[in-house]
Amino acid sequence: MAEHPHAALVRKGYDAFSRGDMDTMRTLLASDATHHVPGSHPLSGDFKGQDAIIDLYRRLGEETDGSMRVALLNVLVDGRGHAVSLHRFTAERQGRRIDETASIVFRIVGDRITDLDECLEDIGRSDEFWG
Image: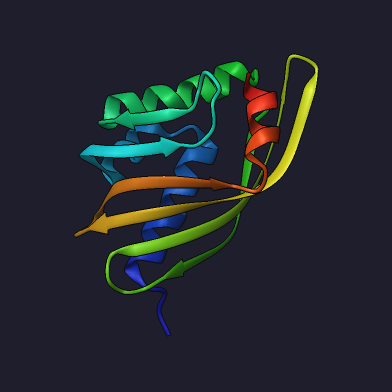
């Protein structure tokens, strides 16, 4: 059986992010999409619009000197516009290292991602790493 289009869309996004292909990322995001990052550190908050989201991704790379890696483990869909990814991310920053499992809840309308809500294994650990 063929993969659900929403799962394929999420996989394409992870692939583009991992390759640093922000042009492809723009084709996957609605112009007014919002990426919600939990926590209380300089990179947490709501990033609304393609430019703000792409800038967030650029900052993640800069803050980790390009060491951030994301490995997609699974994608679940409900067939009604929601997808949930499970991934592992690793990065190094200012002498600290993080290796954590996380998730993103995607809202999808048509063939575009409209909302990304991150969920973390340990928000405190994330705050400490990014703070």
